[in-house]
Image (cartoon, rainbow, N blue to C red; front, side, top):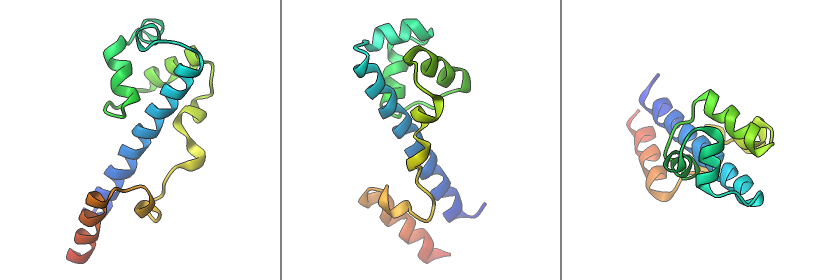
Length: 109
């Protein structure tokens, strides 16, 4: 994997976790569950739920399935497959700082 591909992969994966967390938060709030209650129901605890919702924590498969089951929503809906960014469309999901880094790496290759 070259440097550009590695950075792009990292940024796309990071965006996936941010989107997953936002979808969990949206579903949790729609069902009027607290982070603490969702943590209890999924055996994760409130701090873990908070980190997932903020997109700061990688989610294991069993955690994703537990969230999907408790929130009674499809796993693919939580992942947000329909709007997943591609490497070609990366400019649409990057902030200015990350976009400059990718542009610098492209210029260096």
